[in-house]
Image 1: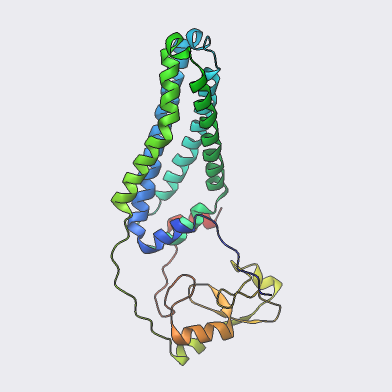
Image 2 (image 1 turned 135 degrees about the horizontal axis):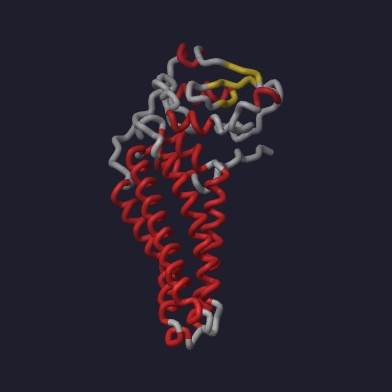
Length: 273
């Protein structure tokens, strides 16, 4: 039984967005990271000021909300560092039209990106705990109103950030109206001019997947594969039949006679990592 091809994760939607609207995606990422960094930095600074000025008062609350704010500020500081790093990497892109899809795919596949998502999930769980403590802390609003207000603002921070990101998305990344793409098959000469390779353990190391996306079957040693100009591989028989009907790659939708973009500074930077 054929096994399905491996998936690249939930960030596929961001990569697909970059394929459809590279300029809008670049602007969206910059705006979203900037707004998130600003809110995280503001929370860290304000919490530090409030806790340093009113620690004796906040420590007398029924619930340990002061330590909740300390832990929340540490999580926000970690996210701030990661987001600033992502923002610096994205700003390396000189021309957003130049293969931004590969740049976004490289960014979302890094360990730092996965760590930022994990910390974000931890933050949401920590805010649930803070909300429960705040509701059950009946005397905190009178004993230490500063602590009560800052805890409330910290809990509402994700909603504010989501609203800012949604605003950025509506501004930059609404999918443009596209003309329908006519399906044109490749000529026999074009198909035969594409290189063929034999699948082996050595060649598998240079491939993103050991599975043919056309027939959904795993490659076996000795299988004859067709390599498209975009770099994707398929069984030769599957690729030839597909290209005879449609000259665009089944995965990235690039035509085999399309000029392939050269890696930009951002992509070359990630390849060296």
